[in-house]
Amino acid sequence: MQNILELTYPELESAVQAMGHQGFRARQLWKWLWRSGVREFSAMSNIAKDFREQLTREWSLVWPEVHEVQTSSDGTIKLLLRLADGALVETVLIPDKDRYTQCLSCQIGCPMGCTFCSTGLMGFTRNMTAGEIAAQVLVAREYLRTHGLAQNVKNLVYMGMGEPLTNWDAVKRSLSILSHSEGMEFSRRRITLSTCAIKGKMDVFDAEGLALPAISLHAPTQEIRESLMPGAARWPIDELIAALQGMELKARERVTIEYILIKGVNDSLQHARQLVRLLSHLKCKINLIAYNPGPGIAYAAPEHEDVLAFEELLRKKGFTVTLRKSKGQDIAAACGQLKTEALGRANSTSSEEGRSNGTA
Image 1 (cartoon, rainbow, N blue to C red):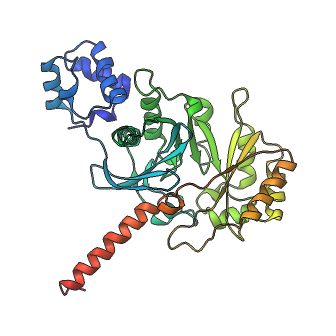
Image 2: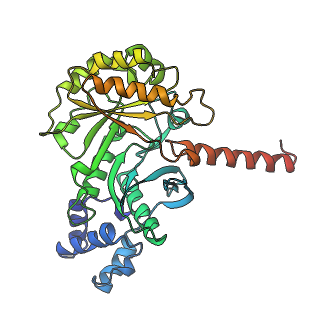
């Protein structure tokens, strides 16, 4: 049976009518699924019993399962989720005053191969479906509620595992689900889609208007970007910046440039000056992030004074700069780290069991 969470609202409306019911029943059903977050059709109390029984016969209602949870001393919560086929994927809840920002994944692994990223190094397994992407929010809201954390998820960032533009059809459908007025009602200004920037696909931000763009740049030159981001660097950096300059943004909107500072690689004042020259004609704001090293990766976190010097130079040149605090360092909260650790533990356990059984 198909998981009903895979349907967009128009599809659900058509499905309900095909089952012999009036269209308004779809609105009731949608609210139960995406606003109330119920896990069973039988819990939908204002829907007729025969319709609930029919739904149970014809549709499944499957959420991702929480496989593992880690909570940081700074309040960051990382959930490792198991999907219906057994695949593991991460989502992270980042606290900010009275609300949480949720970091969503869109793929199992990632095809881009960024050398500083745990997800990039694990390779690509498959795309996530729209329902799997959107249901991460259902799981997070239930987790916060059942653990007495009154704050709700207010902002979404597609910055977890995967490159959204290489799974755009499913990502677009998930955005439609999450933004629907009868459900979670996330507006465009509360959803940020982070991308390495894929040539030929950047027009979705202009055409769809479902999310704000954040560009994972991480390098001031083509040479450095090729070493850090071999997949993304197939699009020359000068051409990328020119394309960004041509984006149609709403009033007061700017392109967000994400720049991870990695010790000895892209964190010097020379690199800052190169970045100034590269972005001098782009309407943008720069989000600096100090690198959070992952297991088995040779790169290191920058020195704090180098981060501050880099930030100061950009500000002096007139850029709006945000120095994002690195959250969850004590729980492997960077993209792909918890899954990498969990798989490592599983492999270690299998090896130990093999040795004990005389098979290794």
